[in-house]
Length: 168
Image (tube, rainbow, N blue to C red):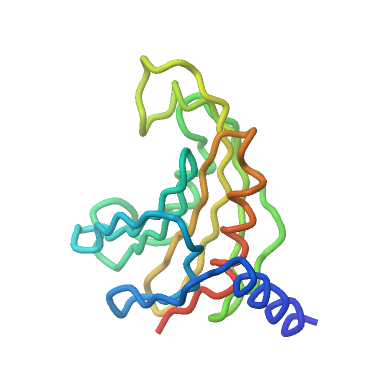
């Protein structure tokens, strides 16, 4: 069943015009075509982001000794405390990736009170889906964020990219 689901999601990625991409030897995935890349993989907490209008699809790698979170448990605890003004994330069904299972979470929040974006912008009702994949003392967070009204299209790109997500 899992293999059939993974095969179906990879086929969906191929139909959507996804392009295979390896990023700095730390992961590979099928990138949705038309999304614009912003590569910040050289930072202390490397991240790789794709943009499509107001939607953001990103991968962040947390290695041992990173300045933010000691491990996935600490990251999870931080996220469960909820972003500034947001509701606590809700656990969704785990997802199959090309490297195994990832835990998936959904969260709604108001971007104007986000700890990341600060206050002062007009309120934007946002939705985020993020997945945590742990391997070999590291963990990757794959996330998609978009205004709630545009989330369904972004979620499809996330699902296809996550299904193809592979770590060494």
